[in-house]
Image (cartoon, rainbow, N blue to C red; front, side):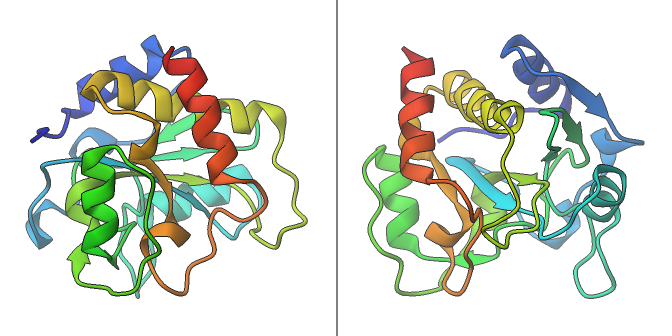
Length: 196
């Protein structure tokens, strides 16, 4: 059982992991904690934003929309590799997913294929949105992929997790394809190497 890190601890963990971090507005106190439990945490979900333009992407992830209020993640990883912190507690990012996937994440094992939506991922996962159109053509710059790797490794190291605790949204929830344009298996290999 891993209690979620405080906003201040997340910030320190990411900076200690070699990341360039920008604090957005009152992100420390910006959360959806009044809509359900936050924690214990077991992993990290990586997303793409289906947007372009760093400024508007960060603003959307902080504010959300009428249909889905913000924050939409804990941090936004823009194309230059900067992590913009937008949420400090429970956030609207993972949605409902498969409890078998959650059990594999907790056990630090390879993920099964999801086949149901019976578990609230917003309670159990940190979420990081990555600026990308999500069309399979928009490039993933080296700096951005390295930042995803560093975020995953930093949070795994802080909690004593392995690389299997970092998953793509598509591995959690039916009908999702994010992050599209790079391999989560290869990203986990990179995180594993960094953890060594």
